Length: 114
Length: 112
Image 1 (cartoon, rainbow over the protein chains, first blue to last red):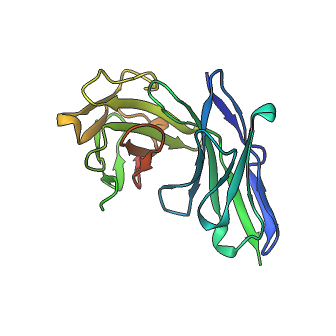
Image 2: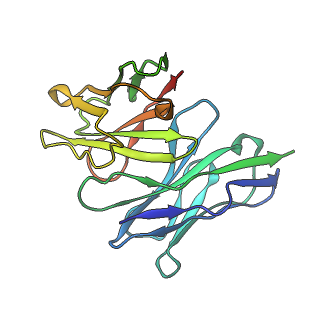
């Protein structure tokens, strides 16, 4: 079975500061890992994904995440927060076989303080 | 090209009524998923269609929920005898194959 834990339902950072959103996963088989962003009143948008290969994954809007198998983590980072980054962020896991349905974390709401 | 579309965008219904939610996936995508996003439960998987195979219904919360996919394209999620706890945003996603899923904007269902 797969599951995702996102530490911190709310994170606030100052504009220009480092963004770090934490995600730990549980999977009995090699996982696919994703970060999705949801802006207010909009649908889910893929930020980045890890399937195989390079463990440091770069996504849109300057975000990146590193797959660390030993820590079962896939934390999302951005060196410098912008006001436009304020949104809800979801980490998700799926597996490489079968339905590939996504198991989501509970989400982290990012607030950027001017 | 066009993304995943869902209709209606908002639906308000009375408790006990049946509702149908529609999803138009991206053309050519063989896989289609329904998810539910609610305050109490977060984002949960409901059902998965892949081509002509039998759907994976393992996420459906009760037998009041059903879904079909006609002609391998459009899908309808039906909720019978709606309850207040069914209030949520229902998200549809499609995928060509493999990992990435493309999400629609969702249907916000409110059961009064």
